[in-house]
Amino acid sequence: MKSWLSLAGCFLLFPGSLLAQLSDISPAVQPRMSANQRKAVLMGKVAMENGAASTDRDTVVLECSGQTRAHTYSDDDGSFSLTVDIVSDIPATAHFQRETGVVSDQEWENCELYADLSGYSSERIHSLGSRDRSIVEVGTIVLHPLLQDHSFAVSVTSLAAPDKARKAYDKGREQEQKGKWAAACDYFKRAVAVYPRYALAWMELGRAQVKQNSFAEAQQSFRQAVTQDAKLTDGYAELARLALQQQQWQELADLTDRLLQVSPDSSPEYWFLNSAANFNLGNMKQAETSIGHGLRLDHKHQLSQMEYLYALILARKQDYKSAAEHVSTYLRLSPHAKDAETAQKALADFEKRAQFDKE
Image (cartoon, helix red, strand yellow):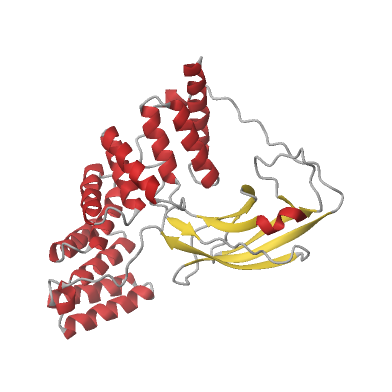
């Protein structure tokens, strides 16, 4: 799954003049290394929750005592290796405001690894094994999609599907699991031809069509799914994904309004998408209301992009101090996001404007 939640390409950001005349960010202060230090290589793999290897070049982050110390990128098969320096002591005056690749013996137990991929939440590996080993096998970091792919969603109309349609549907699911999307489409089309009210078959047909970049056809299939079963939440979620991808903001606003009416407390992602749609439509009041709901539901900070969006909304209100605070939180939660450089520039600008307002 690609980074469909990336802010950089979706939100109507401020004009270039807003980010002009930015100061360079000063380099990080590096701690003086003790003579007693050694290297350790952390090796592992990034995989999806279904066990499949992640095919994206995921960012793997080492965080110690709440601060990012090093990062690397996974290979095409999901494997990664990360080299760090372990020292017996670090002077109290050392600063770790940026990555240094250095970890002390004392804080090793407070280190953890996670993967940073937009649209996914990452499990964290807390136990990194013995700090005395030069090669440390850390195991697998598991990624979970934020908008869950509910393969076993319940549809009342689908329960009445005849055997012939069910068999075609099951064969389509088998082809999906093998990554044979064209064959999967053929079987799902057979299923809905036999039983046009087969909402789940329509939805899986749409998902297979998305995999083939047939977005217009996929949109029609998802619409058929929710037409046949108006309570099939997953169908509206899939339509919302397509609307976001194609930047159809009014469509996204309408779809997420429907999702939030059905299930207002189930998913912070729906509130985030609703806020993004209204932000781009210029409906700032509704955008702020929706992002506020989303942030309250996202207790584990799995969707860090909400902090960035909230900052942009606050900046539109000229509340630059609060905007800077939320951008800073976003960068702390996702320091290696693809739009981190843009966010850094926005943060510098908001801080300057907040200081100007104070004076």
